[in-house]
Amino acid sequence: MEEKNLQEIFSTNLLLLRKSKNMTQGDLADILGVGISTVSDWEKAKKYPRAGIIEKISEYFDISKSRLFEEAKSLSDLYEDKAELLSLPVVGRVSCGNGTIAYENIDGYEETPRSWTNGGEYFYLRASGDSMINARIFDGDLLLIRKQENIEDGEIAAVLIDDEVYLKKIYKNDGLLILQSENPTYPQITKSASDHQDIRIIGKLKRIIIKL
Image (cartoon, rainbow, N blue to C red; front, side, top):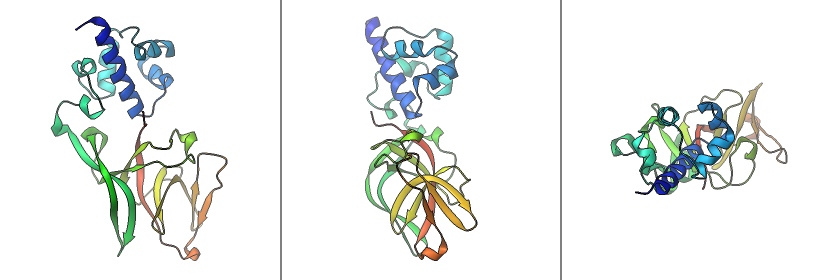
């Protein structure tokens, strides 16, 4: 294989991995101890990183060094051991009935590295709209959600209100549940038991997969 082709394969794979963690080139540069222009050159297939940096990339993204230079069409293709992948549902609608959560209108399944999960139940939602753009969540992005009801103030969670799902920063204050957008054009939503609505926190945002 020609050198240029290897550089192009590496650049594509690095972009997939970086976007899977919702990172900017600056974020990755800080982690690896290099300049932003260096990361940009890698992703433009202008150069390779040196061996020590490849090792850091391999460790950070939990992927073998050899796979960084093997062609992949998607993120799941980069992980050669299928036993290390989970098939998680992409949920088009979530509903609550009889005290349980049901997934409806499943839009498909996403192969997900097992290392992204740590016990519990996980599923994906697809972002819609621009209310969370300052948290780098954009329309069409895939959102990995861990099913749980306990959320710390300031964490981003999926909240079910009368069978409609909202993804917001969550705050609790004197019996109020405050849903805060990450876009100043959207007002905060405040709910209380007196609203007589079916309100439930269904999960915590664990990872954003950017739509390429």
